[in-house]
Image 1 (cartoon, one colour):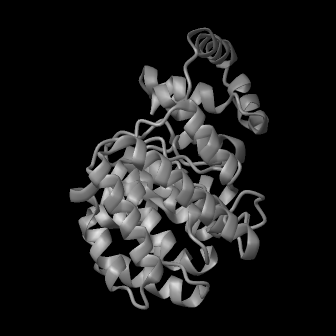
Image 2 (image 1 turned 120 degrees about the horizontal axis):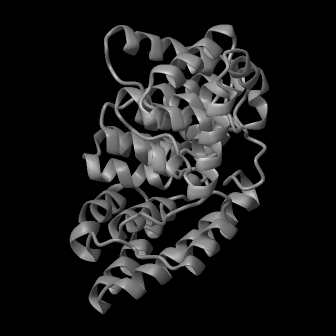
Length: 311
């Protein structure tokens, strides 16, 4: 499945990008002014204007470096209405777990856009290549609202290849950018990487929609390697395997259900609740496991257990 670049909510080009940028800067100003002292708010507004007026990246570099000291690192503490406004501005935008300095740094990057996509993309790439980890996390979290979105894809892929879990999660978690701009290979590599670095899958937006047989095959191979080495397998694997399982994948699901602990068995049962899992469900019936599977699925419903509980 290709990247979903036709997604109606993405930051796009032209008027759409301009609207998202303008709206994001307005939200950032409101939320930061509300959360910080008058002096800090004044600094942020001056920094935005300085970056807008600058003819090079020096003002941006200085402001990004100073942001944590000037506005602080406290959580944004957004309300449900704030989150709704963010989502209305840009589908999938979820700054609910951002900090104030992360919001400020993303806003400063947006403010640096002067209408030239190539220049903006080059500047973003240059900043990411030299950024310290906290700067890089903030810059990556802003991906959904930047203009020139397609041009930023190589840097986004580089971030999810990172061995630094917070950098990986800045792109992979609660971020609509990967589902919209990553091709199938990059998407699959991101999901597999999550398991290797011990990251969770449930915060990845549209995980089920971007599932595919190649990813299922890769995860079955990973599970088998871990079983052979006597290592545990995350139950979230089965969420991606069940809808696309071939014969070997179905066999792996059955094995996990028959030999796994309670959490893994519940994970398999939850994965098999997906409508696309009929073939795997039929295999459980042939193994005489339907009763146990149904019992566990009823337990999931009654206890309101979802992937956030099992990850």
